[in-house]
Image 1 (spheres, rainbow, N blue to C red):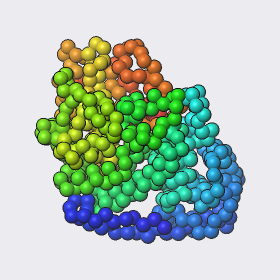
Image 2 (cartoon, helix red, strand yellow):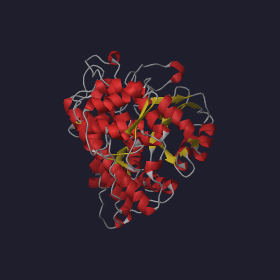
Image 3 (cartoon, rainbow, N blue to C red):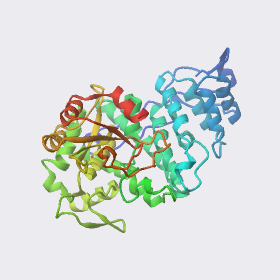
Image 4 (tube, rainbow, N blue to C red):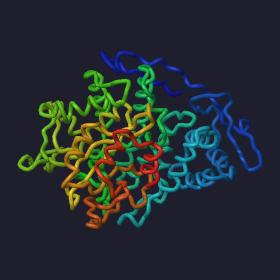
Length: 465
């Protein structure tokens, strides 16, 4: 039984204790199934929000339910699950089976299809042995082993979809960290959802799949950016320090959520929350709270977790937050600010991803910021002052060259590959981690992200690009 933990505090999120609704028990047993033709369906004893296994059958029993269904993607799911290592937790397999066969939300099936198609590593992408099984389903299995699942649990599915890459590219310490961190993340976001419901805000559990995928990715721009860029780990496994450098810890997310609450940044409207955070970091409060070190004469070396790195492009959000707590200032350029804003938004259940607009004849100069999901209108937007920077710099003599949007690793095949090229003035190593939109104009982009890009369009970019 999942118990939603109350978060105590003085203000904001912490002014209340969520009212707990105990999950209802359902039974997954041979007597709780029906067979119509080749369709086998696990039927809960009564309608319920949570999946709870009362009488556990052997693993093969639950796998046989998937196999006998004989429709996509359940047959494929049967074969993929059989390849997982340490497949001994029958309760976990029962939860996955129930989640798959009894879905009423079509996005459950869609998520499973995406995992099956993109969750197994491509051996040719790496110079060392990688798992020969679906690492995204491995994360789902770990989640099911440690947590209860809800019916139509696309939040748990989304976490598994994007964190399988760490299992692929990381060493054993990384894999153990992922097993713990993904479980902690699921608990954290469910707590956040309860807090949203109590306040009457939009529930993250109601977000569409693409927004949840963006929300649960805690890996910054790790594919191509920073000291431990994943594109540099095709020849050797990522160590746990690199994993920790690239990701936002649950502890940092909790502390950021507290800070958002205490400063009164959180609003019922997502636009207001984003504005408050952006203003504090990069606009009205920039001189007090941000040390901008990406302009000529300001660049320097800085010691980060025992390593001397450039101050322009640090990409370590945990360190950034510690830096703020000690000095009252963050550090870096617009890419670092986008990373920090992304983390703050995650901490309060707002989905976002990082974008970059590049301009000029070579595309070497440009600006980073976040695009965030606004559930009231079901669109993705960018803060108006960030778009203003784009408009001022990316027009006239500096036409926009290309637009980039960061894509979480739903499809691992080719994700860490790169190619240095000047074709069409691409400024970044080619990678499936970035959706590329060109040619365009800054006015077109401003119109798109001020009015809002329909989430149906963003879905194609984030899940199917």
